[in-house]
Image 1: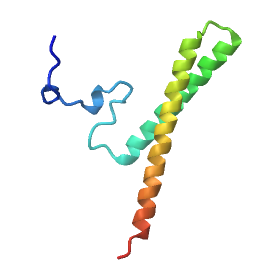
Image 2 (image 1 turned 45 degrees about the horizontal axis):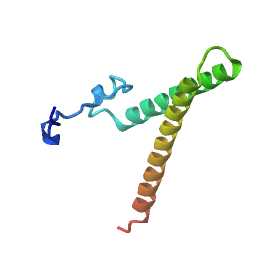
Image 3 (image 1 turned 135 degrees about the horizontal axis):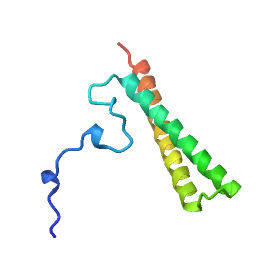
Image 4 (image 1 turned 60 degrees about the vertical axis):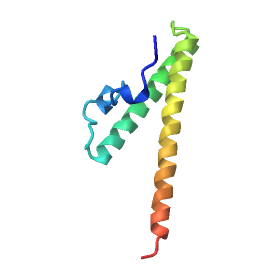
Length: 99
């Protein structure tokens, strides 16, 4: 089966990405998008904590589930940290601009 060219693929909408709440549509205020992203990061962290606690307590959580949940939480944190660093860098660059 031939692979379709990239131009033939339909564009991906924000609402199609799994885990993205329906309230975060294009044109939504930036603060609402950030609030939703932080809430999702906290949810992933809570899920990872529960999975690791379940693994350590021997309550039926397997190591694969715990590792996947931990990696998801780590990736979300790394992305938030990278975004914060970019935002701080942009703010510092803006503040150093002379008018």
